[in-house]
Length: 337
Image (cartoon, rainbow, N blue to C red):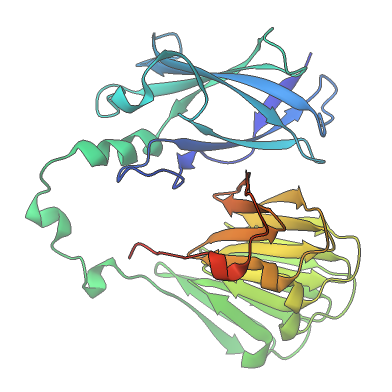
């Protein structure tokens, strides 16, 4: 029997044209009965939104055919599949709890096996915000003031670094004297060099990651509370307080990495590996990819591939074919402030 595990929390997809996003991004790994990933294969998923309980009224059903990558990972956006019943944009997220029921056929057919049913928490209410016509002034009275800001500190004390977050102190011991040049920070998150290890301070918690050799500040790239640290032909990513490792076909250099608003792309010959929300995914191209082929904007990326363009947004890859060669001068970017 095949089964799925959910890798990350559900979150509103930004890949829509409506003011309020009409989709929920979903990432999962398909596993077989022995726990091994179902790699580079088509899987068909049936997704149902239920009202009020795990056995409640079915409000919406869709199916999607996806191809897993070399790690068994696939991505999709709920609300953009093949409609079976209901209408996604008429779901009233503001009343009752909502549950997501997942079924799958790991052969790509339509003989679905149950995977599980999970309660949706913050996502429906973020979507419900789009239906609210008025907001009390008290709810926004502090916008633009220091009341909504937060911060974290670390203080060097010889071979000890003391962290301060949300009013709580915590200390971490290092193998040698620490200097400010050993520290990289972004958005309340810190990485601190300590020989062949890197110690992280995130949300008031210390964690340690080992590397194959001495780590230098030039090996660390930070963007909006996420980090990548180079380690020969591997990269160790740090997101949401969790470390993860990705292997590449050759030595990786900082010039191979493009960062945008906490998301990263890493060039690996004719493949590009994306890092989003702590999850790695891989996309293959028809030829060697160069940094000049990549256009980034506000955490989203387009990669030119002769007469196709591959997009990476919210951890999801998508491909669009064009009638002729596409150049960077053909791409116009617009960012919503």
